[in-house]
Length: 360
Image (cartoon, rainbow, N blue to C red; front, side):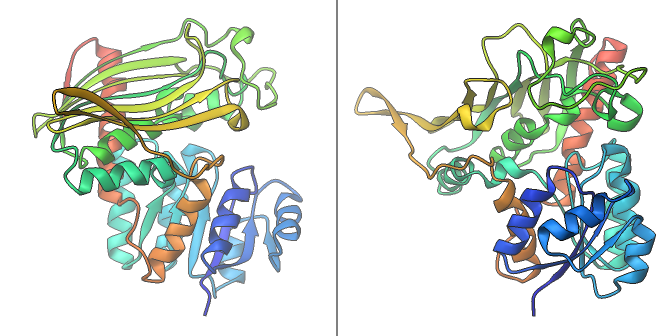
């Protein structure tokens, strides 16, 4: 029998969750969204038989649900995840896992108590080039990754002004918490080591400048709050001796949007990269995957060719959740990894605020 899934949130990411769940054989039986009419419209579009305007109503009205997908502003990730876990449902939540590491720990505790699983949509792990690189790493081709550089930078990528993305109370922060994917991917390649010390700085020079607005058509909210950073830089040392540098921005004086992880191993180096022709538009992007080795006295650069994936692994990530629940695949991520990731994010913000390194 197919796994029955309910979705909380009828926004744009639902298209990828729905496609992934269906690809893996799941059935979307309910959609909930507090905005009047939003759930009904989404339910009709995706062939769901029921729509609700509250999570409480969905949990009460569709007891057959086995799993819940959470697609809402960041502030609500933790309370909804805990509510659904307490109701006996597995959870697939959008990133970030929560507003901070403490909230992730609450999710972990609730999952353990309920005996249910939680996965997060770190979709860049599911990209074909990421999985190809991970295979080389697991096969020992790279050796030990000593150092890595994680980057998601945009020149003009502020997602609207005054909305929830730019409101710290609702989002937890700006691009650092929004575009944390490459930090996650770098740590994934590195074996997700335990962080030890973090030094970070954030910048807000352009966060009020309308010249730096992104291309997605998200409307500005007159009178709304814009109190997050537009860029963040940091350096992380791990208890294993490995190190990670990072650069994340919505608005920064760079040539173009770039999404990349570069690493240096004891046997080979490598890079997974996406370059955008126009900030934020996937159909202008070029993906590359490369290994760097020394062979026969020569510097050899290997280009790894993988299938195209314009959705950046979003469909594959959602499918993996269902396949994991069905016992057909290993999970692409774990709550414990999410906890370490958020410890790093928290520490960068804390270091930026204090002007001092932070120990974890």
